[in-house]
Image (cartoon, rainbow, N blue to C red):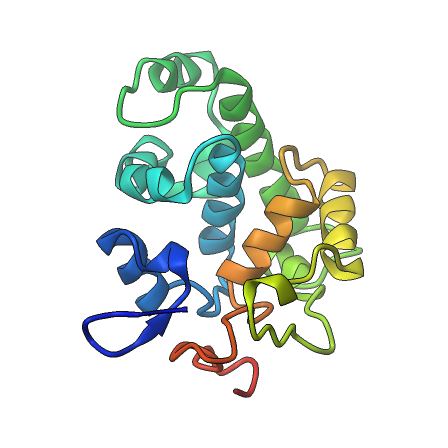
Length: 198
């Protein structure tokens, strides 16, 4: 933990960049329970592969503009013209395979609404993997390296037609969306989601 000029303790990753500090202090770990919000996070986790999260945050406004605010219905309807538009958009990370995956994931998100095996669409599916307990890390060395829940979430999403959703990005999703609380126990953010006690 690093204590900032404001006296608050944060992990190193949230202390080196003002954008990351703001993200940590106001957004990371807060519950996201709506379809569009979770579709955006699934999409951005896919684009994050191979680049820093700070890069994704800096480009997030451009991603939102490029993908119609991550409206699953709009994205699912994209065809070749939209893909070519995305390929030419210098404001986002240009990766045709990830564009196609995001479009496919939009279709998979829409399909979940009528899936008889799923209650509550994408949000209901993702939150159904909330574990009975959350990690309680004192140091970064205490962070879990695997979990039955995030492995199962990745496998279930894959079975429902989602791509670029392996166990590691799904754990990052669960952290970011408040499904687990991995704030270090000494962090001022620990327990602030309202999902888990301090």
